Image 1 (cartoon, rainbow, N blue to C red):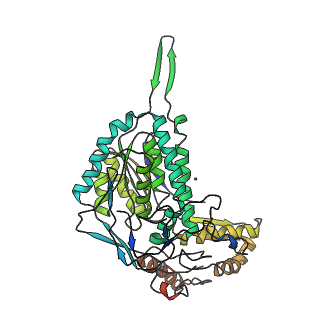
Image 2: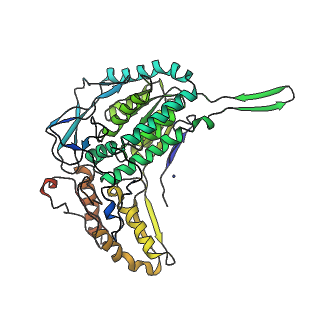
Image 3: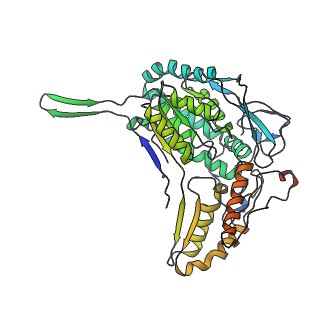
Length: 447
């Protein structure tokens, strides 16, 4: 049903081809431990919750907090501090002159400032990765596997902590954010079985001749990550690339880097040597550095068509292996013989989960035959969903990432109306009742 494009040039030996089918501290901030099944009592509601809470495991957090203490509200951060780089297993203050303000999408209160890393800082990250590569490549795969087992355990332990960071910076409901972490955790678990995936081959081509093949790490590889899955997509690269013997540079989205910073902290605790994993920040300048730096051998990107095509063409022209997962436009055809209730539930989840901010979000329905009469029932289910701050109990739908995203969505609704569409459900002008959310990036569901 998806038309998502995957552009790939070559393969990174089990490293970047897996695609599942300054810590941010705040003085005077309220932290507590959130029950991992806080919304379990809502499960029997007639309208299925869009976020799948993972109640079978406990975890915990947000940025520079601990595994048991992390933010659980959208209260204003009284003294925001700057996000740091992570180089050589150390959190390093940036000397940047350009900073990007990061706001809580639910309130537009300032959470942190993200640096546009300096040339020296970008180079230092690559120097660190280059220095670490020979020893890491020579490390036995069994030892790398042992570190990965510890990394998986730490992600589980800090599950809610990671989710809270995502809710605060990206806006997802807490349950949806836990699902974000889960999808990345599954990749890290898969990486623990790498020993059976990187064996070479021996082929006897004649009585006195054989051909041997070996799998070797490439060297330094980089990932350029989007805003919509702050934990999952960095975890598409870190576990697979690192356990295969590569050293890794991650550029998280400047809109929500907190989860990646926690993952870096956990990597150091798990035993990854200095330089194996480095985190740098910034916008277009940092992307261009990654593309142009000759010591970086491969790039993995997830994001928009325009950016992906640019990264793919410029990177591959320089001989890099580039994997680019680009934007999508998703349609569903609703046929008369389908199970009505199951279909309506599936449509609600596919269209409205994560506030529609995911590549697989369902944006268009094609009704066939009598199913065209079901549109009002979809609207009825959509109206019952709870638009609220991500930390609020029972929230089904959070804000969108930025005021610009809100404006774009509202302009699309207005354009459709101007062209003669019937607005069955209008999401414009909607926001939670609590006054603390008055300035958030709120757009409710629209059909």
